[in-house]
Length: 116
Image 1: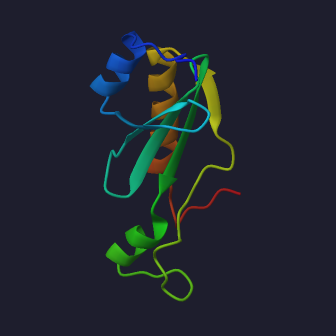
Image 2: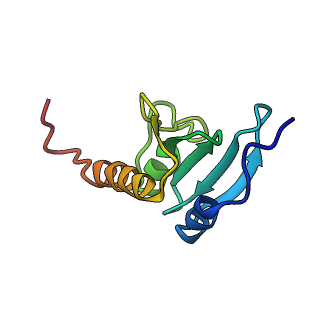
């Protein structure tokens, strides 16, 4: 398998943001992750050409910590994901902007004032 992920400035910049290299998948993509809090994991998948940014929020664990439950109180498989992941340029300013967009949207969740 050809290595299309040379050690580069982006890797160091992602690490400076708190991302850790988790693995290289079967397609050769590098997968980075960081946990801004104990429920939220942000992922960056790097194919050497562009980045895919996604996230997962452990909603079941979060609700249990609040004294709430979802359905039959099974917390293990209650994970919130975005409906669509974001494909962005291999550029740290684009990464930072996308992370700010995601975190801003999540931090604005309001269970009382619902604007349909």
